[in-house]
Length: 66
Image 1 (cartoon, one colour):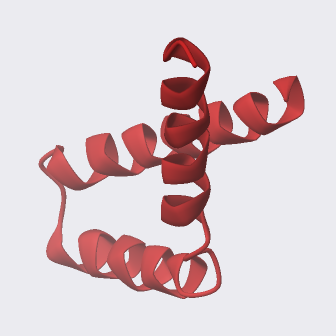
Image 2 (spheres, rainbow, N blue to C red):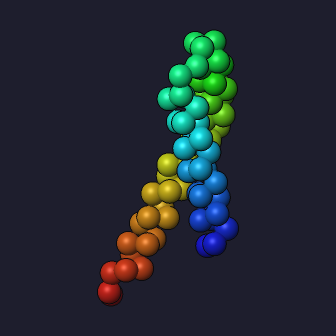
């Protein structure tokens, strides 16, 4: 379970860095290059959202008394 949380932490950190790069003032050519690179990476990585929701559901089920 710890490995799953490490992977999720790395993904969130990468998203934060990408968001920071896109919000900094820079030339349009650099921003368009970053956006195209990120879209190429995110297409095969669409499993992240279901993975994160599964992890949160697991936490919710662990916290509920049965």
